[in-house]
Image 1 (cartoon, rainbow, N blue to C red):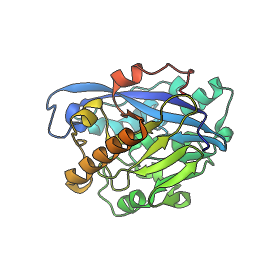
Image 2 (cartoon, one colour):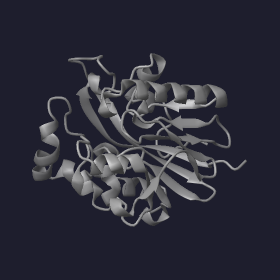
Image 3 (tube, rainbow, N blue to C red):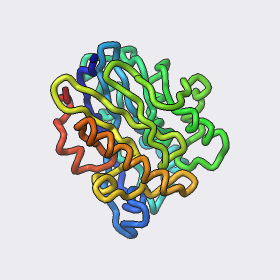
Length: 260
């Protein structure tokens, strides 16, 4: 069976927020530092990005920062991001450019996962149809309308499917309406499951705690997705990678090293 070739976690920013954002009804008044990650996956048929981080302009430009990010206080502080953490700069360090990305797979549409699309013009974008329906229906917090300007051209997906050799999309709704995770088979190490925001922290997985924000307050759906990912990991002897756990991220090989 064909497998992916290499996997790079990319630290695109960090953000300080109240822990209840990640652990539902736990962590009131406790603030944590969380990574904002994207993942570069090389496969026999091309390169995939899972998530793309924030729109750097909203962080660097004081007027945009005041408009989009400052109103999130006190629950969220604005992300901390420098020019070197933009995805095109990571690609350049590998001798690549945006033209070498064959597909962007968005786990969901929140600004810290989809905002960086502005740095990846022309890329094919996959997202679950329920994400776009939720955005179109209104009331989807954490998504900026200007970042969805190109959404009419997104490839809407439903269900689970093979994104590329060794890379499979896994439905994991609950945090958002159409949240998706990725199952990645690698040539040397165990498979990796990129949980996305189905599980922000190791704590979400170990103690089966739903994310703080659940689509339409459906905590049971979010917990079902956590249990589904855990069962898949057990069956396939795979590693579960939570998405916003800084200690877990620092335990991985630093860029430009990769997992294979």
